[in-house]
Length: 174
Image (cartoon, rainbow, N blue to C red; front, side, top):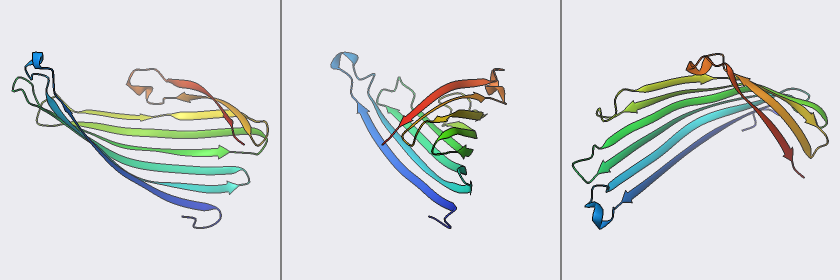
């Protein structure tokens, strides 16, 4: 939805469900038979604002739920239920010229929680992760650009390591 020529909003959503049934060979006597149901649901929104000339700001926020149920046909196996819930997003400022210096500076984040069902798997796991990411490069003409960048993990990603990785990206379009 374009609210003005400078500001746009959007929404997204999806629902997917898959069911897999596994039947083992006769020699396994049915010990490896199971029924798996996986589902993914996500809803989110994004905004894009043209700040000045080639400078834009972008923001996105998405909530997702992924429950999984595995039912075993053998009483020797334990059924498994869990759900992965997450809120993910990003705030980004982009300098996108037709030619010359280009840059992206952003803060992507992810808050994820795994909820265990009925005690089949011990404990619940929660992870909060965010990065400060910067990419810098050059657009040679309207069709080709090259960027390199790195990320810093201010939270240390729980390991005490603050370097979040490096990357290079090139785009070619006509």
